[in-house]
Image 1 (spheres, helix red, strand yellow):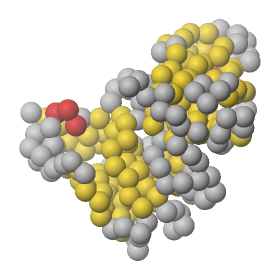
Image 2 (image 1 turned 135 degrees about the vertical axis):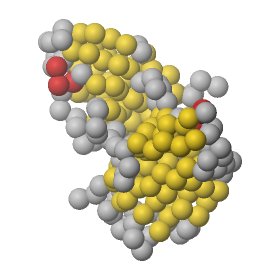
Image 3 (image 1 turned 45 degrees about the vertical axis):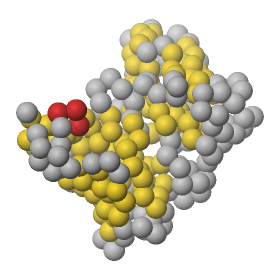
Length: 114
Length: 112
């Protein structure tokens, strides 16, 4: 049982390049999330998808777009990468939003923007 | 606004000791709390959760205590093992949809 799978694990980009981070979950969860993790800060929510067909902004959505491709997959796109987007990106999923359930995380994508 | 913080950034213990990791939260309306463990190079791993209508919940070697009066959460790990070395985060569920607010984490170092 893989849980939440993220690809790639590592990536280096130049400023201005674009990239899509992929995430898939095999737990039949309805809700999916993208976070970024920076040193000295807690995880911050970028975007989330409460259910297939819906997406909403989180705390730090600027510079990102998302696509909920189907129930399993939720991708994060950087259209024009900036050094400030250097971070570790985590995807998570939960059965639903708005209920007392834990979110389950992938192992992250480590992204460096030069 | 909502915030979740930790008292100690690093906790060092000996193998076999009991560990206690603390967390303060600011939103008295929060109704759900989670502890995560994060090992180097890995994503956060769910350990245990507790709802606001409970004061204590036990898992395997772990216990979470919730004190709503002082808005304090703690994670107790019994008989700490080297494999417990990691960063531990608490998170609280804020208002509205299941938006989790994460603390910055406490690093637990277990010496043999």
